[in-house]
Length: 329
Ligand code: A2P
Ligand code: 11C
Image (cartoon, rainbow, N blue to C red; front, side, top):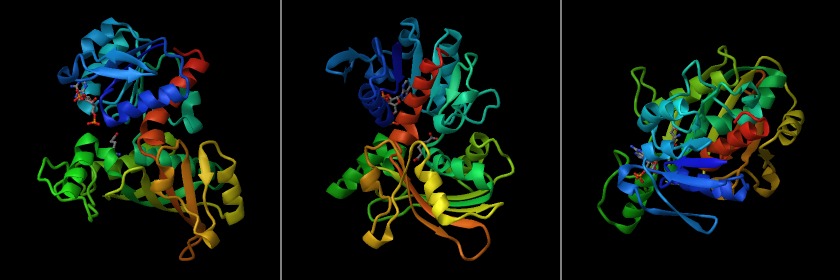
């Protein structure tokens, strides 16, 4: 496969390269792509150097597949041009996720809906992916009525600029700010931009994308998304009300038996998911699983995953693997 990585110099792009190599994706030729400012820069993949090219040059090189993580604007403008040239795009931005003609894919849940007609495939938002991976098996069994989620999100979700902001704050250097406030020793209840309804776009992604991926518009979701000074993963406190009652040990068994989930739940020895543990791993970690005693059929859980891995790069490459295995490329 000729593989283009669009945004190869960014945080997610770098992890995409790492994950492609780790999983031995059959890359016959790598085409690293970034903005005009990076053209000619060298990117190392499996010990070999590759020159970064611009968008049009990447199309001219005719990759089989292009993995995009270069922001929504770039995707809106360029993904259709790649698709018209017969290149399958898997897009990690928010540009196409809610487009009715595009599939929004988490392989463990809905990759089987993909066909060879899907030339632009959307990768969901990181905070949505980890939540739906953990909720899908429970939805199947008990049917979700309502989700209340609060997130504790890593600065890496914002990109290189935010990582730099924290580094500058720690070093006492005044520099460019990714956030409206300092992030060191802070928690900022503001991820992405505000919408007219008073929620942030990140919060509304958790609502809309969850309903689309679980293919159920009746699921009520309300979210609060908060940025905290961690890297290594997003954490989520999730309160979920089901139509039907459940048994806690059965919930744990179901989660344990599901692809991509690791249950880390033993409070006797202080075992629960944390970003320092999820960092660099591909799984979704679930713990603090307990009944909400304040109302019927309701569960509390704590979900952590590496937002650059399962939340972005790994999920994208799992979609590519599915396309390849299913001969859809
Ligand atoms: P560049 O490094 O040349 O700016 P992050 O989200 O970590 O900041 O990374 C964003 C990625 O998207 C980078 O690889 C960046 O390249 C790339 N990018 C940004 N704007 C464009 C653009 N207009 N065309 C192609 N790639 C872009
Ligand atoms: C964050 N979830 O942590 C974002 C990053 O819609 O793909 C990814 C934004 C997106 O801020």
